[in-house]
Image 1 (cartoon, helix red, strand yellow):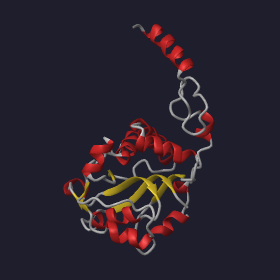
Image 2: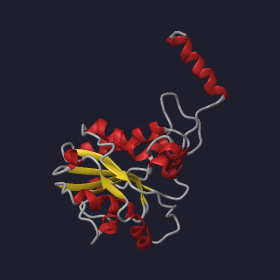
Image 3: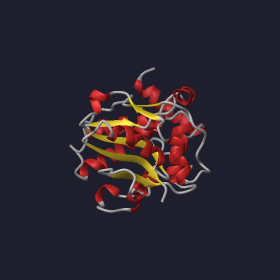
Image 4: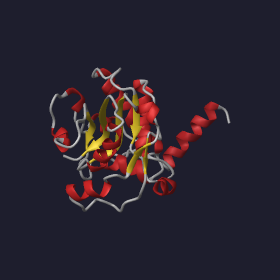
Length: 233
């Protein structure tokens, strides 16, 4: 099928089965993927990369000395980011994570973070959970960031040594106790004395990131920062 016929065929299919925006459910205009231009413009960005002090830093006060706490957008119930992240995690849309990483990577690039990190490390899933899902959404985000920032991803920099049940209904203290000691550094030579950017999908209490930070800081790494796709206030 030549390119012109393929284009007509795709246009015909879109009339019958239109691709809908994840944010508003309206049909996507030609050239857009996953999110329409209006929802992209209305993403509730936090701009933490441009702020000296912000509320997300408070989640780690007295726990982890992160150099930077970078949050792309606010996670709002039934908001754009919740719909986008749900599609990323449960609808086999890995490209969404890469897309968000590219978008945030450009923001960080313009914000002066072009040479801020030596390695990007995604928060790992337990192997059994990743086998079920087929991929790690944090790794997808890391790939997008890496593409723009030209910083290598150390995919297996951390490994998860045990699986824990959902923490959705647990308080901050219990979450921290649950995840304590469940992560280990795998690729020491690539992370020791490096400026590491730890990445995840959603920041809630921060307990998982605290647990990941402990073995990385023990290497030690030169500096440790964190970047997430969305954060809960």
